[in-house]
Image (tube, rainbow, N blue to C red; front, top):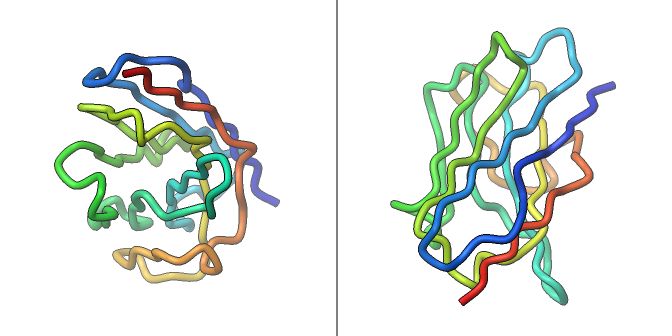
Length: 127
């Protein structure tokens, strides 16, 4: 069983930065590709960004390209989401997720490809 705990959410002004962290309680963190999804009120949960098991490959949704960066530290069992130039439409609950069974440089992008989910952390961007 993998437990994921997100942190770093909060209230930020438009244009500002915020960094989310997700700590995984698992013995073999490097066996999991990691993803970030978000869900705004009344909307479906959507893919934001993901990183391969090795950290060598990433993939971002078009709406965050150039603004959000994902990284991981396999020695600390932690994945990070650096968010810059935040917009009010980025307001959502952000979820960390883990996917197993993929090759070291593959980046899964679909919700159904992820096996474990955190509880989420609220990000609110004020205009």
